[in-house]
Image 1 (tube, rainbow, N blue to C red):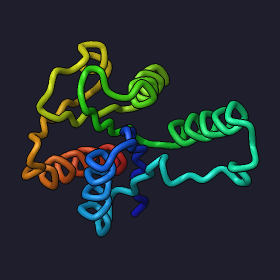
Image 2: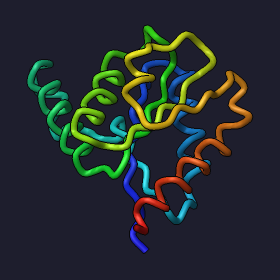
Image 3: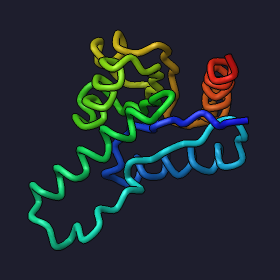
Length: 147
């Protein structure tokens, strides 16, 4: 069986954001139906030697191609005024017809992001229900891939 490819859009600029992504990776590591792609894992070859604008262009182009290859995009939203890159990834995925699922923390959310997705899951700060949300989303995507 082919695994569904999921692009995980999320900020990763502080310990809390990175810790949540680490939890997602651990919880989904043995999932046989879904392969997660985390854009933060991409390292630009010789990136430290590039001017910042060239490095940024390389990251942007790579992210665009990865979103195009994905079956779905899962967005982890940390609130209305969260990461602009994550909001852009969500909008781009929606614009090219990808299934977009938003997992949001218990904070104020952007109505644009909420309206530009196929499913919305609410996650509280404790992350107690995170694994259940991920399994529900992966069950939904595996149904689509098998059709």
